[in-house]
Length: 81
Image 1 (cartoon, rainbow, N blue to C red):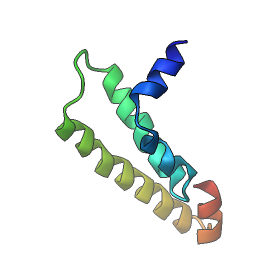
Image 2 (image 1 turned 30 degrees about the vertical axis):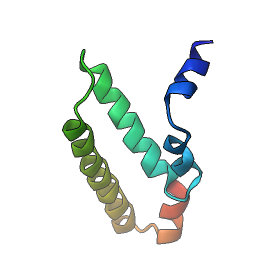
Image 3 (image 1 turned 90 degrees about the vertical axis):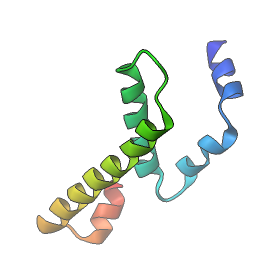
């Protein structure tokens, strides 16, 4: 029942954006933060955690621009994300 303890410790609002149109971007940010926590023995500082978000947004923006440059439409990009 370890999962139950996790959901008791994490605020419900953490998962609300996963039901929004920007869910894939939010999920990518969470995955990046989680991956970074695996690289450190101590909890991440707020500053380090916040600094990861622009990196994720930049990488996603670059991917979208590449997709558009390769002839995909915004509609197909939306389907991807």
